[in-house]
Each structure stands twice: as structure tokens, then as C-alpha cells.
Image 1 (tube, rainbow, N blue to C red):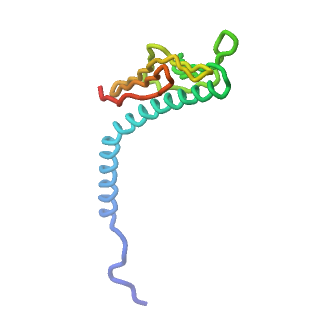
Image 2 (cartoon, rainbow, N blue to C red):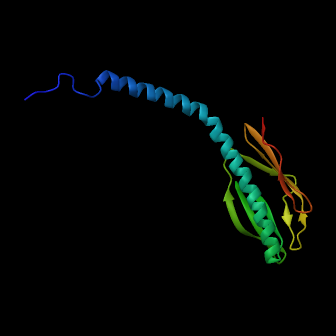
Amino acid sequence: MRTKKFPGGFTLYETMISITVVGIVSGLLTISLLPLIDRQEFVNTSDQIKNTLRQAQWLALTNRKSHRLKSESGYLMLQQKSGGSYQTVSSEKIPDEISVNANRWPSFSAFGFAAGGSITLKNEDYSTKVVVSPIGRIRQTSIERR
């Protein structure tokens, strides 16, 4: 029976060097991608607020009841006017590192008008503003690096 003099495969040294190189490269990639992950979370939160505003506007027109947005204790709440007070329809958690403030929380009437206002989002790296005009137009300013 004959056997090959040089069987295929990797030596222990080749395997160890390969694993070391892969570990170093993945560590460098992780460090360089962390700012992108933080920015994406900020963008997702601002999109969440815009989508909730659009939902409030749509619900006000279809249900013929006023709706508004409000933030309390880290939650963004969509509220519907019932009688003389507002009842919470839905609430979503806002990430802890993002602060949400408003000079006036926007609300939408059953007739398509809006009580305009602006919502400011900030974290340690970025800031933006979501503005609702009195005619119900929802727009966002550009995301600025702080």
C-alpha cells in the first residue's frame, strides 16, 4: 500500500495565523462601524416619530376625532381625544440615550388642520427637528452632527 508523501491540509501554524488575522480584522471593523450603528439608531427614532405623526394625522381624518403626540417617561404616546380628555391609543419606547423635547406637541383635528409644533431629538452626537406646520405638513430638518 502506498501513501502520499505530502498529504493535504493546513499545519497548526497556518491555522493559528489565519485565526489571528481574522480576529484582528473583525476587531478593527467593529470599532469602525460603531458610529454608524449609533447614527442608524438615531435615524430610526426620528423615522418612528414621523411615522407616528402620519398615523395620528390619518387616524384624525378617518375616525373624525382629534389625535396628538406626547412624550412621557421615555415613551412616545399617540393619544385620541375622547370627551374632554385624551386617551392613549399606543405607546412606543424611545431609546434612553435620545432626548425628545417639543416646544408644542403637534395635534391633528378631525377636519385636517393641525396644531403645529416642532419636536427636537438629541443625543450626544446628533440632533434633528421634526416640524409639523398648521396645514399638517410633516418635515424633518437635516440630521446634524454635534
